[in-house]
Image (cartoon, rainbow, N blue to C red; front, side, top):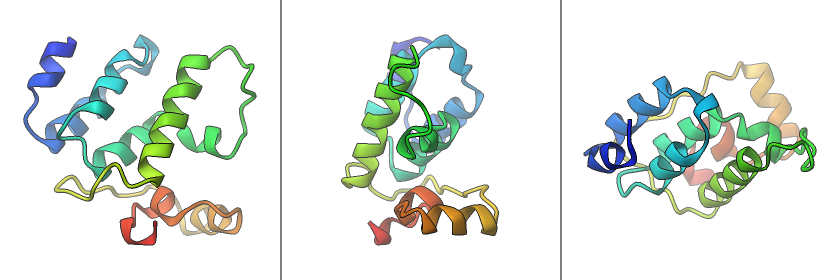
Length: 123
């Protein structure tokens, strides 16, 4: 899909369906376009967060010198925008696939609730 085709998408659900099928080996230009799309809501942003494995960047489990600078910059920027409320709750609902134990361990590490369950009111 080209950037023009992404810009032509009309709804958050279309964006979410697209990112679910995106080949992340193709780079970050397209995910950046989705994250910047006017219809990108909190549900889509959290889908991007999960699919890009941004949690490992948030938890500093990856060295910043790992040679994956595009990935790290994408994840850091997306996380910042989620945590600062840039993305508002919308029609695209996010359903975390974390187990109760995984979620508990993340909470114990101080991870904000929005990154665990998508609960925007906890920001």
